[in-house]
Length: 299
Image (cartoon, rainbow, N blue to C red; front, top):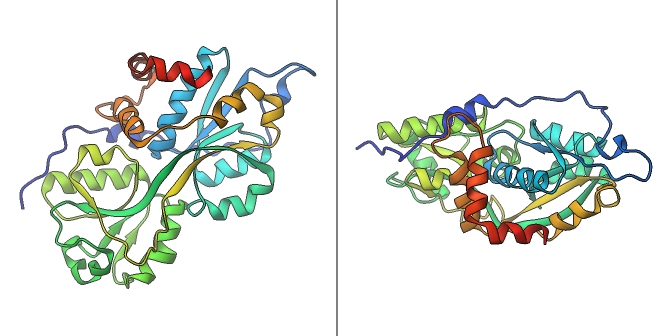
């Protein structure tokens, strides 16, 4: 099998981001403002390696700072994200997948979290393989497990995608004989990159939208039993009281939508060929190239 070289790599940046769990109990940004004065400080939670939500987070970071807000992005794991939102330690999370992927977290913490809006309704969880792999459907994966080293390479243990794969996909398609490896999105992407360069078959848990589809020749395995569920909604969540404390921001975000084509361009601009993991100049360049659309976000 011939090697499949990607056009570029953005793995060093992903590997260099660690999930930092904050000591919860800090005051929310709004609580730091004087009585009757609207806070200009906003803290947004983001999950390392989850680049659909992270791309939009970087976009709104720049947009809100241009509007005079002081924005901090905290990279934490998904469990800490929901816990922190419910405790008021984060103001926003822009990358929740509902109704399935994060349903367990919302069931646990949802009474203290508010939904701001849905910005994309075409997100999907999948198992992806190299395009020339000898299988096209999850229904046939078990019979071809040897081609993939009897492995499915996953992401974080606490991810909703991981739960769906363990609880729904593996038992539905009789994949118990394959080792399901979980570690991190960065580790999964490193394995994917290595396999594509060496020409080996590989099966990974992945999601669309993701920049990897523009970098590698991949295909999604068909899911005839619907174990992953239907398309999901990428949803903005907020701490309780955000609408009262930051009504301008809440209004902008509640109206925000972004289609897959524009999102793919944003992801590529931020994450491809960017080993430094620095986004300020890249997002500024992308905004200038999309100025009319970006100006409409706060009109």
